[in-house]
Length: 102
Image (cartoon, rainbow, N blue to C red; front, side, top):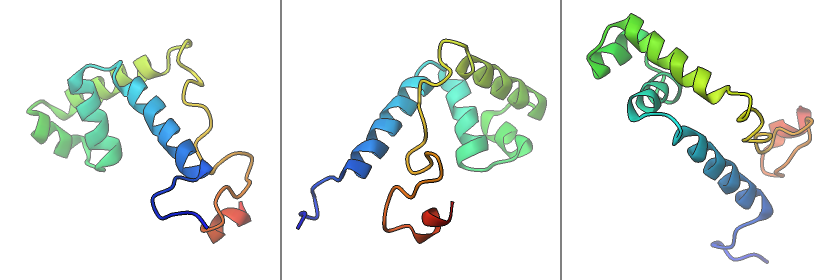
């Protein structure tokens, strides 16, 4: 039986994916990373993010576009690999029943 603090292969896979994601985010300037996090992690609208960043909503859209363009560079495509638990519809963790239906 595994100890509570032991990591499973799934945990290692998630941590590795997270490390690769942070490596990509580190290629962005702080404003681009912050704008992406406001829009895509925190779910703010362009208007709400504009208030936080103290710019116009159009400028937020431009910052987001520049950041996404950077992350879509040909040499970076596929750098993250497949997201954990979402490879070819196979359940990757027995604790998530909905995954077996994919």
